[in-house]
Image 1 (cartoon, rainbow, N blue to C red):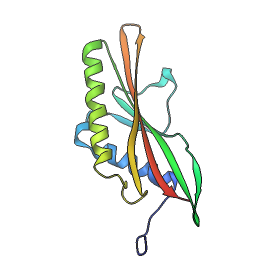
Image 2 (image 1 turned 180 degrees about the vertical axis):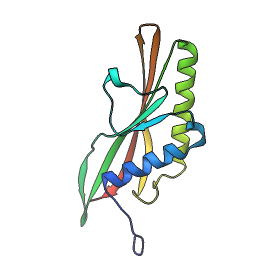
Image 3 (image 1 turned 90 degrees about the vertical axis):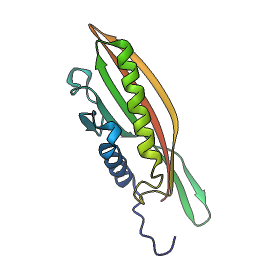
Image 4 (image 1 turned 30 degrees about the vertical axis):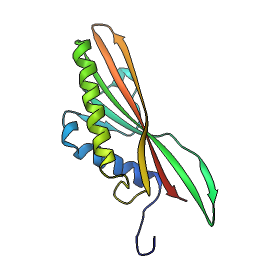
Length: 143
């Protein structure tokens, strides 16, 4: 890509993901975005989100190395209303996917990205239930 300055490293990609999610209108109810999972006793106010780097393969290709970085985007909602809790976390997941898919190059930090997986987990916690969805975002860059 001659003439195009790409910042292709994990920190730049993670910053771009956080910026996209923080700016998304459908995610305005998310009170905090974190760069690592907090200890359960220190969970911030619900709902909150986490963006973590999950590694990925590095493949030799022609004169350069192709790197696939995977990022986990986790959306967590804690509430006493288990039905509404699940619906809320599903709506947050849809908004996050829409925000990420709107710019697959993530502000020119990568060549391409896509949501490759979704996992949901519900955990009873006393009078509350914690519902969480982990989205896996796959990105491509050259080392």
